[in-house]
Image 1 (spheres, rainbow, N blue to C red):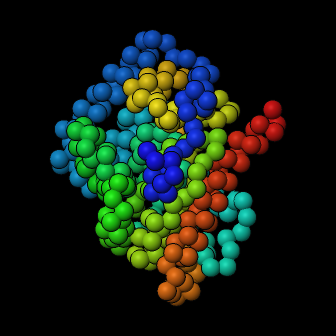
Image 2 (spheres, one colour):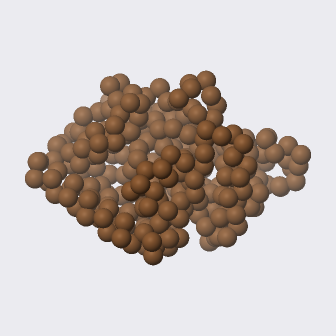
Image 3 (cartoon, rainbow, N blue to C red):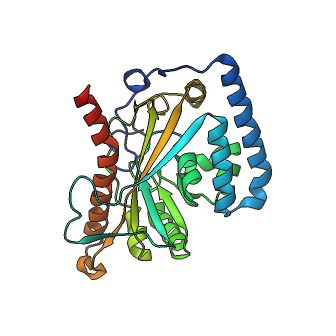
Length: 295
């Protein structure tokens, strides 16, 4: 990737510098059982995908089964008040209603879409390359994924409109606006483009913080960064005993008055991106810093 491109951001995280060794290792029999179980769930998903398209509940059940096979437990929390400061004058916070919602979070691992799908009936906004992987393409399409071509800036308006259409239809769409993965100790800035879809559809943006935990602290072992390979990451995940994925959902945010930014769409989506990023950062980076300070 081009490190200077704002459309193809690059994380400074690398496996050598960022990936922790598991605190407690699973035994070889347990690891083999996890791999066998995961393969079985994936094969079942491939068979069900043609009839499961756009059936978010079925995708949720499948994702839960796959995570369970890998030995991962999910902890879901709700932040009933904003963390890390007030919302500001041009956006407002409120409970997320039933219907279309843009769910945005930090990106750590290939596990993230599974964790979100297991938590919330939703559709994933994924990069076009995912749709070119034969097995993954079938599974993603079965889950109703939307694809974005990050190599073609000219395709961006079409992708934003596709997300807006899904939001208007009442779907929850999941996006990772950092544009790349980070290890979880820090996170990157949110790119604002996808937030335009929420503005166009008139729906709230719900920030979401993802962390992976072992024992009482954060684990970077499940992260998928730099030149790491998918196989190495999968084997690392199956070797962890007691791995938990923590999902923190914040109140939804939307523009207080849509006309406030009339004629200034760039400012509107940047405002939403900045507020959402601040909330996610409070749920990802701040707990890690507090743990380090207490150590």
